[in-house]
Image 1: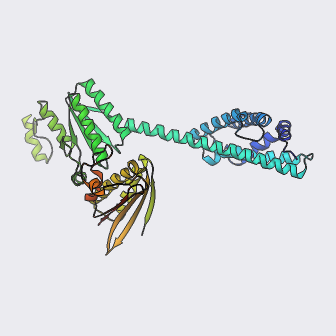
Image 2: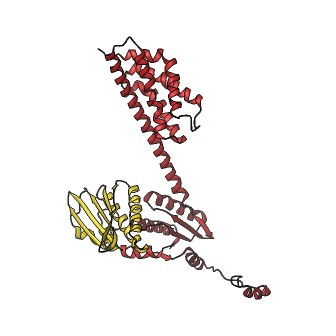
Image 3: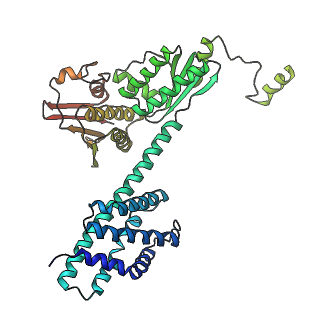
Length: 300
Length: 131
């Protein structure tokens, strides 16, 4: 009693006209079109193409999904899975594409009266294994595509959140936000050093107000950035060290041998002073009551 | 009381350790300074577990004793272990390329600190910070 895969090939080939509508119908029932992310025409053409490739795979590779004959079918599945991952389909919705093919295939097998019950059941079993494997493959690709999206977003966040801003001629500020793991520090360092060259900056203020935790690794990265900037001829000032961070760093035993200030404003004042500038008040401001305001206006 | 386990296998997990510690520290009612201390200590130990222990597990607990609440963190790995624990606790000691302040720093940042390590078997470090 050989599991005659030829029978399956023949059945899939000759019954495509019944399998396809049944399959597409099941997918629609499962809600594949409800979200409006793909059109019915698209679903139909994807399903038709996959059925063709599945038949080719069956004809040349039997029901063994790892056979190279399934390469084109898997390629199509990978493409579908990837595009669905990007379109925002859920894993379940994506897997439905494969798993909903089971019923139409089994129906076709059952309708074929030439098969003995034992043969039919053996074929059903091997087709189940095949489709399960293809289903798992679909989910793996789906998962991988989602992870790629996350990695890409992480990279985008890393680059977005490390701008170097020019505060004044020769004075740069680097407002750091979030976790300073090694990869981001690399981006930060490159951005800063590049901008130092471009703007001929003498002073760079590294503001860590937005860094929630400063542990020894973060401190080490900061110190390395400072050392590299120094080699390029720019002095660094670290600002935005909050009281709780300061206490924690003392307990940790980390020493930042760098000028540091509590706020960015203080650091900026130091930077201006070092570059021979100062911010001075030209007149009394309007802050306070109207009484204070009038003489000032007169003074104008 | 509440407890949670967390695998430490990548540097993303170190971030997760910090977030979990923060949540528990807030729940235990620790002050902002104490929160920052335990979070920083957790960050050091998690990175040690990852870099030197080859990955491991954190058991984070919200604990209560004598009417005080606190956070206890136990880091465990099955890495190479530490042959001389006393030396490892000294500032500036490192077998890698860090600053050598993490382990000693974590001890100074915690109210309770214990370490057990056997070469070839792994390391277990427990810290606690009380309100």
